[in-house]
Length: 250
Ligand code: G3P
Ligand code: MG
Image (tube, rainbow, N blue to C red; front, side, top):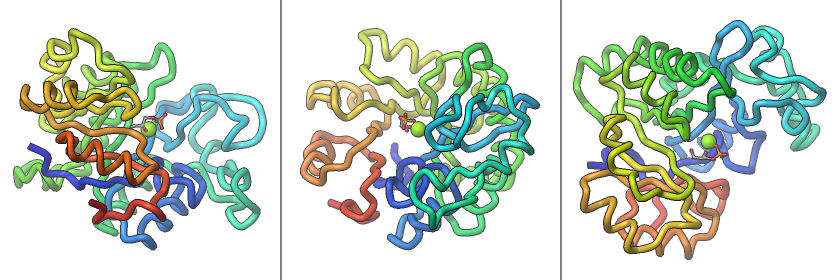
């Protein structure tokens, strides 16, 4: 039911390197991580870029937004200096660069689709199509562990991903799991619920597991909390503290 890795580096390499950069993936590898979560949104010209915030100001300097900037311009922006001068000029990656790097290094991917407002279907569809093309051989081989897991807080984006690539697994991201979660998950054909560990209870975990879904949590940075939720039946979680919680934790 959960063929994927149990411990996953959040936003590339957690907090040890600039989030959502190749430097982050390298930091993860240095700590033995071969599983990563990262965020993808579309540029103005409709290309998937690996970035978390819709707007500039935090991880890249200046004003503006991903959705109003062309991919080539984004790819030349410095997404590293905010964390330290040693990361200067670490670029905003293209999604396809992340795919290539992860395939080459055998890193499993949880691709979080993060659409800008109004671009839900377009983003979900684009990410699913590109992922499907890159993983055509793995899809044909029928081994679920070899496939990336697409996830999103956006129902519309995930529905579009389902329509564009029904054979790629989907996780439905929910901050707080609502009462009607199962009807939504069923409609999306989701294999897993991804939820905020802060709000998870043993009862809710048991309910999700009993319904036959995978259960993944974000973001666990306290080893004690990690052990607790795993004991409730949580299948996996992502962490920023790849230095504290290793790939073979628990
Ligand atoms: O995919 C889970 C987690 O990444 C959701 O939070 O804001 O870090 O994308 P965020
Ligand atoms: Mg994310």
